[in-house]
Length: 125
Image (cartoon, helix red, strand yellow):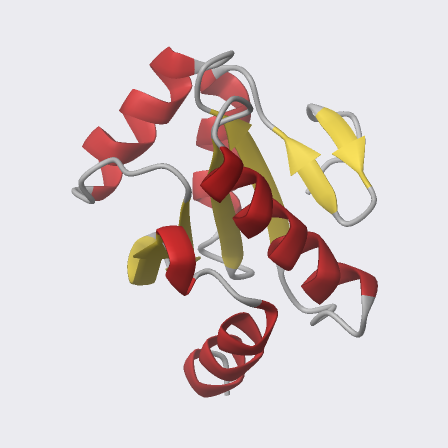
């Protein structure tokens, strides 16, 4: 993704606007995009976010992009993602986009570093 987009958190780009979401969505036509929907007030979401960061701090796939949406701070963007993808909103939630379509998603306690490794390996061959 364009480095000028959103706030950069290591491998993760925070998106806060419809334009940034549209860019990430369009980018998924060329490179897969992992979306993390994160509630900054929820302990379960904090744990899931830590698992996502563990994944990208270890040996993340370099052939994809990673975006985070803070659902309380960017509610309209979070709602637009659910609407555009036809994936019911949950928080925390991870969604893998490939070719403009959600090919996998999970939420809550299922968001683990090991699960991300397995799913990304199987969906991105």
